[in-house]
Structures are given as C-alpha cells and as structure tokens.
Image (cartoon, rainbow, N blue to C red; front, side):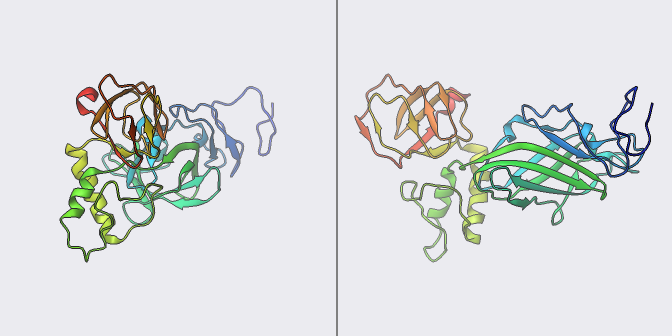
Length: 291
C-alpha cells in the first residue's frame, strides 16, 4: 500500500479525498437540485476535508433568474465554515464569488455586503451573494475563501429576459418629464433584453419591483401577433408565471398548459375573443387561478 505524496493510487481507499498539498481533485457526491458538474481544490497536505466533496444547494426558484440582476442568490452548504475558528452566531466572510458564462467564458463579479466580500448568515450555512445584471445565458459559480478553499459549481443557473413590472409604469407617470425616466406606457416600452439604465430609472425599477412584490402579479409583453386558434403565445418572458394556469391577454382570459422561457403553450379560451391581437400587448397572470 502506498499513500505518500504524489502516489497515483492506494489500497484501501482513505475515508476522504486528499492527494497532497495543492492537489486538484474532483468530487462526485453532488446534490445541486439537478445541476451537475462540481470541481474543488484540496485544502492542503493531510487535510481531512476536501471542498470538492461538499454538497451545495441552490433553491430551485433561483436556477432561472432575470437578466436585470438584483437577485440575492443563496448558496447552502456546510463548506463555508471549514477551517474557521469562529462558531455560531458569528457570520463568516469574506467570500469572493464570481459568475462565469458557460457559452462565452466572460467572468462577472458577485456583489457582497462590503464591496465584493460576501458573508454567511449566523448559522454559517447560507452564503448570500447579489447577482449583477448579466447577459442571457448559462452561468457557473466559483467561490474562494481563506486563500486555500475553492468551490466551483458548473451550470448553476440561467438568466432569461426579466418580466415586466406594472407598478414601475405607474411610478414613472407621476414624475416630471425632465427626469430621465424612460417610457411610461407599457405598449411604448421597448421589448428585449435588459440594458443599462440611468440612475433614476434604476431607482424606479427597484421601487416598482418592491411594490409589485407586495400587491402585483407577473406581467410580460407579447412579441408576435396572435390569431384566433393559435395554441402558442409568444412573449418576452415567462419569469414568475406558474407552469400552467390562467392569464389575461389584452383583457381576454386564456388558459395555458405549459410554458417555455419565451412562450405559453397549450393556449385555449372558451370565451369570445378578437380574431387578431397585435404584438406588444400586455399579458398578466390571473391571480385567482394561481392562488
């Protein structure tokens, strides 16, 4: 049996995964709610802990997030407290969290409580990081802390076009025209991916999202014309809508049985409806059917 530094193999297998100081290892016992592919870097020679063998959870509701950002991503694991002399109720930090585009390789810095430094909650199990605005695509997450600990989560989440916020348009309509507030009409606003806004527009967006979070309902915009009998309704985003249910399209009630990122499928209606509805119209969730 050989278990020395640089050994290619050993028998019997040790109870933890450690190949020597600075070794790169790969863990397989991952439970990331359907997200696979997890890499870690050994914590040091003789260490009884390898971060690659750690289970990290991301809530299913956060595996698809809006491209406009402003989301607090919660990474749940027991890994964050490794090598720490502090015990609860003290928070741990700082952690450096980055997001890497799977398709592009572009790297974006996560936003922490203090600059880029992210911290856990008092249980030392939940690491929170704010996600900045990101181009549409799939992203992996890297977490580094204490200089020797590294955790990588491949294909952790996707970004899609953000849903509309009806409360935002209401807030904009009350401001004087000399504020750079953008369009105030739902039908006039441009359809497409998120783009950098002015400070005033960003502030209004945050306020609108807060108001809608308490009293509003998911809203999106149609991106193609709808004709009587069509079973698919193409929209800007289905973020926030349930997988099936009822919705209002231009004040007409529809049922749908499924959805993709940008469409409702299995669309039907039992009531009278116009033969033709032009695109760029409002599509809102029927709250009663959702509740």
